[in-house]
View 1 (cartoon, rainbow, N blue to C red):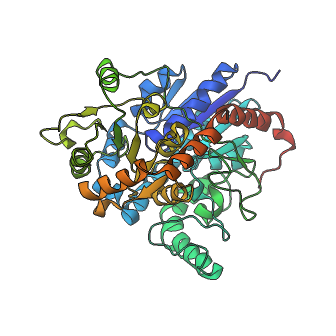
View 2 (cartoon, rainbow, N blue to C red; view 1 turned 30 degrees about the horizontal axis):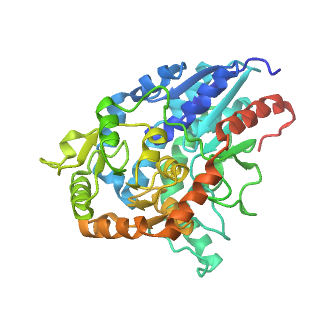
View 3 (cartoon, rainbow, N blue to C red; view 1 turned 135 degrees about the vertical axis):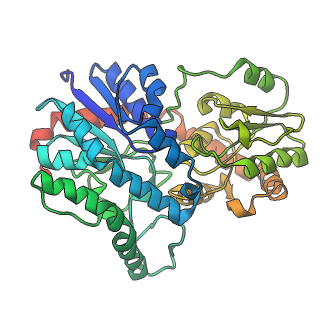
Amino acid sequence: MLQPVNILVTSVGSPGDVQPLIGIGLLLRARGHRVKAIVSPVFRTLVEQAGLELIPLGTTEDYKRMENDPALWKPVTGTKIVLQRLAELVIPVYQAIMSHHVPGNTVVVASTFALGARIAQDRHQIPTATIHLQPSVLRSLTDPPTMPGVFSGPHVPRWLISLQWAAIDKLVGDKLTAPAINAVREQVGLSKINRVLRDYIHSPQLTIGLFPAWFAAPQADWPPQVRLTGFPLYDTRGASHLSPELSTFLDAGTAPIAFTFGLAMSLARELLEESARACTLLGRRGILLTRHSDNLPPNLPVGVIQVDYAPFSVLLPRCAALVHHGGIGTASQALASGIPQVVLPHAHDQLDNATRLTRLGVARILMPKCYHASNAARALGDMLGSKIVSEYCRDAAGKSAGADALGDTCGLIEGLFANASATPLG
């Protein structure tokens, strides 16, 4: 049996970025390891419910300021904001790891953009696994991710795809992140790096994709250390439940349509208004999931309610369809629940996730600027009335059933520690 290990999990981002890392930590703790979570203090309750120790990363005020910035939800400016935040947290992540590092008995499990972990790995030879929640961060010339403002697809020449990525790296990725990373690397005696988004975001020891091969098939030009384990499907089920009001609503009529535009989305008033109208046009019941009550229409139609939060693993199997922003965690829960999806991708990885969902035949894409009640009702009506879409949804749910992504992920992490002495670092 593997000895108890000091495991540090760290994530930079929204609830959808943090929850899977907490799920991994929860299971590692159940396996007997000592687990600490280096995340924003915004997630204190989530961390403590999982029985983990919180190591605060940044401040609640910093997190709220980024969350409430309208530019975060735009394709170009949103990426810049995320990368700038990544750069700001390089030193805090590195310092937190070093403060809690037990030499010879530590493993770090870091999300894509917690790059202070990569510096600690390079300098102190700490076994480190990178966790990618979405396939869009894995570049490929044979199956390039679909990104806003980037030419991609089977008919785009490979040289043009490579040229675009090189330009993105030079003008955006390295410009915003490399100075902060290299400043720390220089202080600790390491050489400078570049091509952060192409190379440095992947741990050379172990990089885990938390999505299945049937959603994003492994490509020959992915980094060779990438392993796929599947969707984690961790959403605090067991720690949070359906409210009595929501349970009563679900029991009182036909399966509703659920609408959510991300737990971090605080600027969704128009989207929620159009969603409520779409329910009226369809003659369907609806659930608007948002913690921001000021985003709600003044008077909701009969049969439409607002809910702060509900675990999707419990809620979505009782829904007819889901309309959402394209976050990978939300999409995976809908796939597991076997319901059709309408996706409104704003920025980041959302367009790529939406494109992959449409390839599976389970989703339709509506760009946010085109999201009106009539368009939403038409897309939902077409999908809900299609036997073919229903078959595709059942197929996706069948593929999701029985998978143990978190268990397989924890097994790889434990194997990383066991084999660390034989694993050379790049």
